[in-house]
Image 1 (spheres, one colour):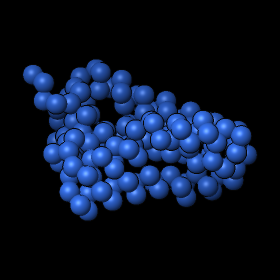
Image 2 (cartoon, helix red, strand yellow):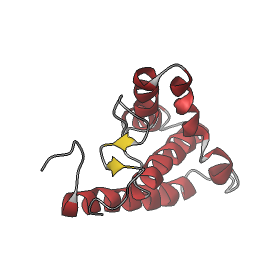
Image 3 (cartoon, one colour):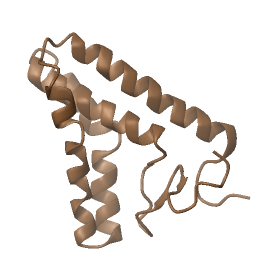
Amino acid sequence: MNQGFVTGKPRVWLRLDGVVLLVTSIILFALTHQHWWVYPVLFFVPDVFMIGYMRDTKVGAIFYNAGHSYFLPSLLVLFGWHHHLALAIGLIWLGHVGFDRLAGYGLKYDTNFKHTHLGSLSNEKHGA
């Protein structure tokens, strides 16, 4: 039965992808030679993309998904490759996305903030 989100073993794999992304971002961050305090200070900044939910769930999902997909932080990493601070910020952003995936916070559907591609945040009993 398809409920609009990933279940079973594919869901576990997607959450493991989140672990890999988070750990990789931390390892690569070390190579930027930025101060370590920068990582935790900026780690939750991507959550500012939730601001769209002040309007409605459709706008909120667009903003949230833009800030919580791989596209924008990957662009920042690519374009900031020779600028260590921009590279570091992009890596922290990717780490945040990985952390969210690990925690079960997937990309949002425009019907409800709690309805994600990894399942419903209001009911974690659907086959982690």
